[in-house]
Image (cartoon, rainbow, N blue to C red; front, top):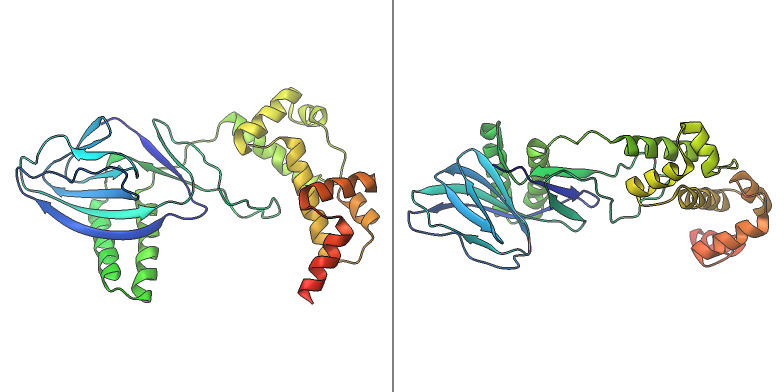
Length: 290
């Protein structure tokens, strides 16, 4: 069994769509279809399922989980040679996902402001084809999902969604250990948040963390997709917005408090990101709140 991982960004969360239970007789095949829009998660009860995704062939056995990707070619590469039974669930993902030999951390498609310290950028890791050690605990959850979904009411819908998230937690793979690059990037990010009002350069960061300044930039870009300078700018502006809307402080003081000694440069940078000057921004949003 070749190990492959599905890495799925969980902001927003995967959404349960539908589930069911199927029994194939010897000689029957799984439906041949292209471009099916949902993930298909299967839990085998008995028999053997000979399933292919594009040109890759798999044999799924009792006690195993298997996941088909959306918008790929799914078909039986061989008919059933015995009675075959499994549960299936369809789920949808709006965020990014990737299938690879190794799990990969993915960024959320939702832009979470840097001020949101405690909003994690979570990636769900699922093995495409794996043995489920706690299968006796999994089947009751699947049956409850199916029952709630079949009730066709609002309560059943939300209960099915919650149970589906519980199921994902049961079958997920452990988060891979962070690389030294990711650890360094996290340390730099925390430092920038804690010292955003100070003068910070890549050289200073390099000295602090005992790495070359180029490593400071590359670690941030590889881990977060953003340079230290751009992260610092965005964070400073988010802090400025908070002060603009919650205080009556002068623009020059706010600029200095968030790390800009030159108020004109601050105003120019603010307008570049928000399309209006700090003063116009304050007037506009304070009027809306009133």
